Image 1 (cartoon, helix red, strand yellow):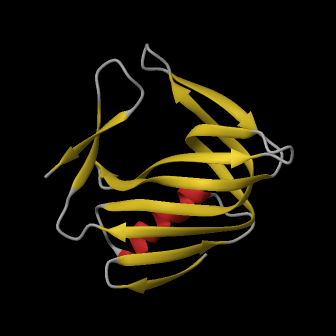
Image 2 (cartoon, one colour; image 1 turned 30 degrees about the horizontal axis):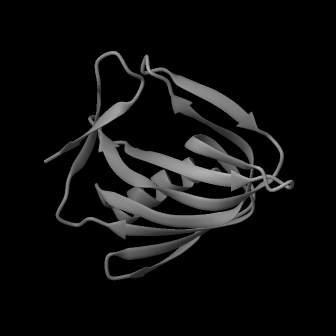
Length: 142
């Protein structure tokens, strides 16, 4: 992974074999921010686990094992109550037949490259806290 900074903006290149969540969490610790918006991302990934939250608040997970084009990525970076970086990302992928797969990204490994823009929110503190009856950690602001 390499990155560059211009003011509150980071532009990140994640390289083959690196997992996106892990890389962005490492970046948050390295740069030292508590809140950010992930505004865009493109690339090609593999070993993807994605899905959606059903009406009972349970995530349904699906595998997208073959390499696919990452056509859109967005989300945010916050901290958990114990201070760990937490990424919440949604994506759209296109397989080699141009079928679109979309949803919450649980895992995705870079196959060729991922290029991601992040806007650091310097004046914000965002904390992820457990919510009753759902798997999602809720976003709270300080």
